[in-house]
Image (tube, rainbow, N blue to C red; front, side, top):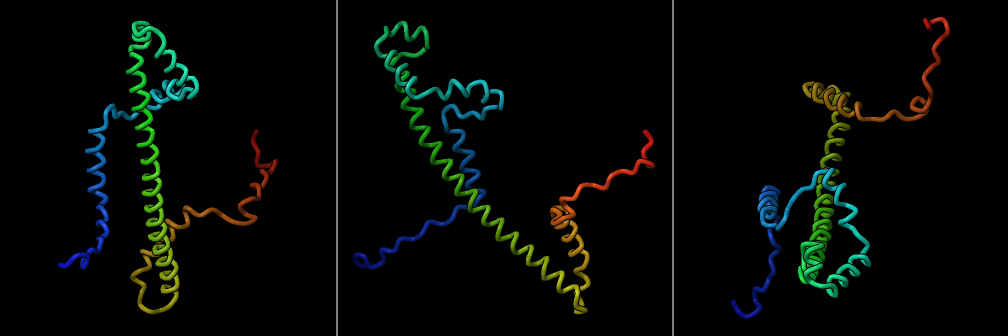
Length: 177
């Protein structure tokens, strides 16, 4: 190969979903303090975890000017440790944002796959309904069509006037109060 002759960038191979899941599980083990909060834990820490940024900055400033012994005894942390914790939080906030974007992209890609599959299944359903109206010998497919029709119809909402009309009133003669 001569200089620049075969400088073709190859697109990276798409990862297999199983490999991604395994990699994410391994990643969880390496994240310091990784913990999925219960609903109760989330509710109990939410207000304190999201203090007003101005209050946080003022608190960090107080920690710098007050005696180190007092700050340590009241908070369990020194001013330097509080600043380090604040910097670490900012870094992990960036990770959170990027992971949310990544997750949104994965959700979008999978939703498109589901849409593509759904369109194909509905096309099969429509063409199967048409095929069964012709005497072409496709009658062996009728049980499949019936299963599809039941599944499709159970999730359909009724349309039109019938869906919005109130139920008929009970007759006074039928009442046994």
